[in-house]
Length: 577
Image 1 (cartoon, rainbow, N blue to C red):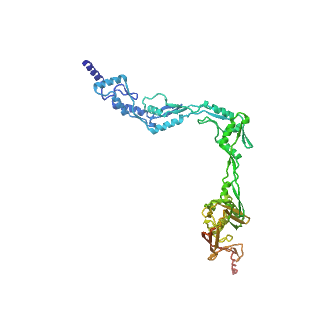
Image 2: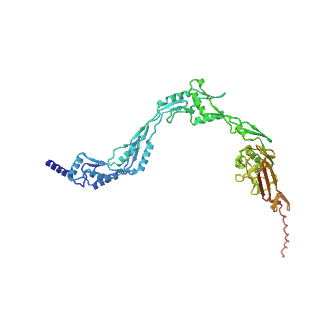
Image 3: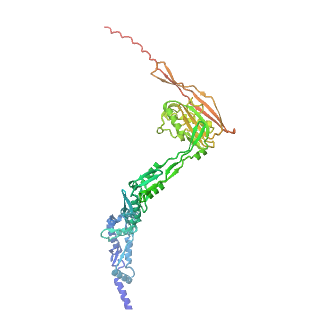
C-alpha cells in the first residue's frame, strides 16, 4: 500500500505541470489553449474574436438568406471568465493537479465563454427576419369565377421560432470556430383552421344557389335575380368560417337599393289652418324592407332546387311617422292664439327674400317651455340658400347686402308674439326709424349675434304659420287659446337735434339748382309698454321696450357753381419805327 501510494504521488507530480499554465487538452470555444498562460490565452482568444467581429455570418430561414455581423448585434464573449474557467480544469495541489491534468489530457475539456448581446438589436433583427419569412396559414375557401364555384385548398403556415432562432444567432455570431456554409434558423409549421373537406357542403350550396334565377316577391310586385346578379351577393366561407350567407359590401349596397325601390316613406301628421280654424291631418305610416330577414329569404330561396320554389317573399315592416296622429292631437293645437300682418314692398330682390325667409320659419312647432330663436330657425342667410342682394341698414346707413328684407319677417313674428302675450326674451330695434313698421315695435336680426327670441309659456305646443301675399305678410300662432288679454301704449316719437345736410355736387344739374333725394330725419326715440293679463285677470308681464333711432342726414344734390368771366386783355400797340 505504501508502494502504491508513493507511486501515485510520483505520478501526480510527473503530470502536475506548472500552475501558471493551462492544462493540455483544454479548449475554449474550440480553440486549443493548453500549455498557454492566462494572458497568452486571453490575447489569443480576443485576437480571433476581433478578426471575426466584422465578418458576416449567413443565416437561412424560409428559403431566404440574411447576412449578419457580430458587431451589428453587439455580440461579445467574456474571454477573461472563459480563461479563468479553463485554468480551473487543471488547478489544485501538485499531486491532485497532476491527476486532473492527466484526465483532461486523455478526455479533453471544452469551455464555452459567457456571451452578451444587445437585446434591442437582437429583437429588431428577429422582427426583420420574421416579417420576411413568416407566412400565415391559409384556410381553405371558396372562390367564384363568374357563376362557377371553385374550392381553394388550405396551405400550411410557416413561422420563425424566435426563441430558438435567437439562441442560434448569438451562438453562431459568438463562435470562433464558425460553421462552413449558411446556418439554418429553426422554423415552426402552423396548421390552418379550415380544410377543404369542411367546405364541401358550402360549395354544394353555392352551386345550387347559382344554378338558376331567384324571383323576389313583394305583394303583387316581383323582381328577377339572375345567377350573375346573385353571385356577388354571396358571402363565401373565408377567415375560418364554413357557412354560406348573403352579405358583404356588394350585398349591403344591393339591399339598400332594393329597399329604396320598395319603401314608402311615412307622412307625418300635420295641421291645416283656415283663418282661426285648425284641423288635424292624420299621419300615413310608411313601408320599409327588413334587410336582415330579406337576406335570409333570398338565400333560402336560392338553395331550393325546383324552379317553382325559388321564390323569396321579401319581408316588409311598417315605418311609423315621426309625428303620429295621436301625438299631434295631444299637442293641443286647436285654435288661433294670435296673428299680425305687415305690408311690404320694394325691389324684386327684397320681395324674394321676404318670401324665402317666411318659408323657412313656416310650420315651426314650438314645444311648451321652449324658446323660439329666429336665427336658429332660419340659419345663416347665404346665397347658397337662395338669398339675394337687397337694401339693408348697416351701421345706421342704408346700403345693399345679402338678405335685405329679412327684418320684415322678424318684425311680423315679433308682433305676433307681442299680441299672443308670451314672454319675449330678446328684441332689438332698427338703427334707423322705418315708418311702415308699427311704431316702436320693429325687430331687427343679424346672424348670428342679433336675434329675436320668445318663450312658449302657454303650457301647450305652438304652431307658427306664415302667409305671404303680393304686398303683405301675416304671421299667426296656433295652439290652445289662453284667454290672455294684452294692453299696450306707445309714446310719441321724440326728435333730438336738427337734421344734418349731406350735400353733393351733381354736374348734371344747372348752377344753383337743388334736388332733395331724402329729406332725412333727426334722432328719434319712443317706447312701447305691454301689460299681459291672464284669463283670471292676474298681471303676468309688464314690459317696456325702448327704441332709439339714429339721425339720417338730408341728401341734397346741387348744381355746380357758375363760372366767372375772364377779364379782357388790352391790345398791345405796334412798336414805333
